[in-house]
Length: 248
Image 1 (cartoon, one colour):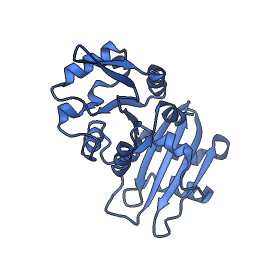
Image 2: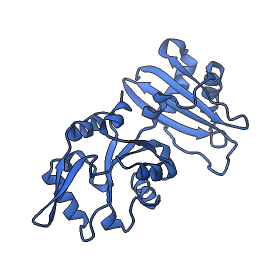
Image 3: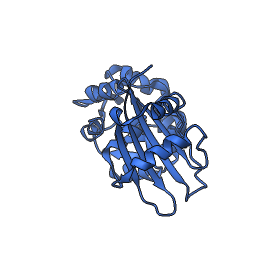
Image 4: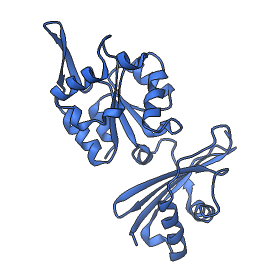
């Protein structure tokens, strides 16, 4: 049996809107509760009914053998097996701050980077676009890889630059091996850019997180683009250093 190290719990929503939670260590979990935690960890879910605005929403991060498992569900979708575990965690819960940095890391499943002035410097040589990786870009991508966070790109790219051409440019500057190619989204390919939420919605769909956008991070130096990502429900960071802080 795997070794349970801790359970992080957060309850939000409901009519009061109060946020409550707890951080329960292994020594505080009895055998009966341990069985409930094991069952929950083996059946991860991420579902809530967005139409039920006043429903209580439960989030759990279960750490077993150093590996976190994230679950999110609401009172409407809670199963009979989950209910006694939630009852136990609620008995341990206390008021929590609105923005708890621990939960930013727990939720993070996928990060998308802007290219120009975030991951690369772009310039022209003989009229052709060339990319040069920014200092620290590869190290940042490697850090997210070690944390098992998927990595992609959302970039406004010149007309006529198709997927193969853009991936070749990323290959030449050394970034392509550190990215999930199916998560590389280019405006010249998809027909929309970061002036609207449409491209962020498309990227979320590709990541399989269209209904869980709070688990997505956009990293880019342009404030207007970050605001658009926020409007789509994403977390944001202004540069690769700020993004890496989420992993600490």
